[in-house]
Length: 393
Ligand SMILES: [Zn+2]
Image 1 (cartoon, rainbow, N blue to C red):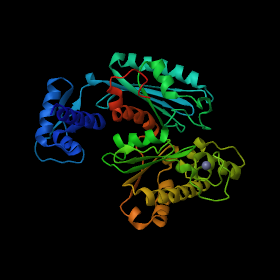
Image 2 (image 1 turned 135 degrees about the vertical axis):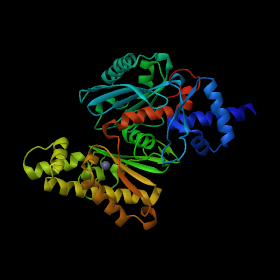
Image 3 (image 1 turned 90 degrees about the horizontal axis):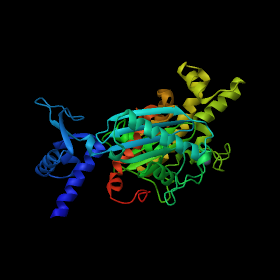
Image 4 (image 1 turned 60 degrees about the vertical axis):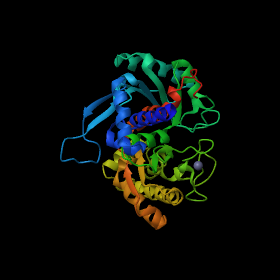
């Protein structure tokens, strides 16, 4: 009996960690528990100081009468750290478990920094945000860390990546955990983008989602049943290496004609450079797009079509409710998404495409950082199990 009660209580706490705030009715719906069971558990959480109440309107519900009272976990219930490594930046934030970011910092990093230098910067930044938020380190339950590289799920090692060469072979979670004295969970950037859009962004309330990160590389984060899907070794979602043009350009993976060689922001910038007889960076390419440059728009449309073919194949296999497109290239908006949608409609079987929503991500360059925070909330089971530090990795 006690274990059933404990299990129900944990379901309510997990729902609050994932949702941030929710009404009692929403909690009943999310957990599948009865209204009266939820009310009893919430009363208990309020009494113990683990949760608090505020007035509010739950998402997607309009009430003529008094707005329902919303419940959230108190910040005393713990804090989460989010760490996001990009190719040339590091962002760190601390948030409470009701998803409020308390402090955040950002800095450029040397492109070819070593893992050692990167990890030292993390320790420094974590001290900085904790001091700025004036919170006690002992209240942090764990850290989520994003790296723009595939992570081997068995060994934890960062795998070969042209984007982060100084980190290959490093067990990033174990190294960061040892330096911070906290459990650390590591994910690749596309998976964190998916999680962030699910919790905070364009895919809130969905459970079957494909997130496409279209930047200097192309990757996907796949969510099924509200959970990230990794595959056996962590390779799930490598949509950038779907072959679109057999015999096309040679890819960094050793294959030919991969989506990434045709549709990444780097590939588009290179095509543009050749046509203009000047070196165009991906950033400059996006400026030309915003200025309405005809050749740039044409190339971005072609990229959208190529991504659409890969997404159509993905939809035939996974049948998601919603495809969210994020990454640098998504700022091109309809120039990218229009041709992408058309290609999906043309190439996917009708039943996989008819109710599918394809939309741009809404979190921009903070997606990975917010995803790293969401990772701590989602994986809170592991973080709150009283095990020695590092054992969770
Ligand atoms: Zn490839």
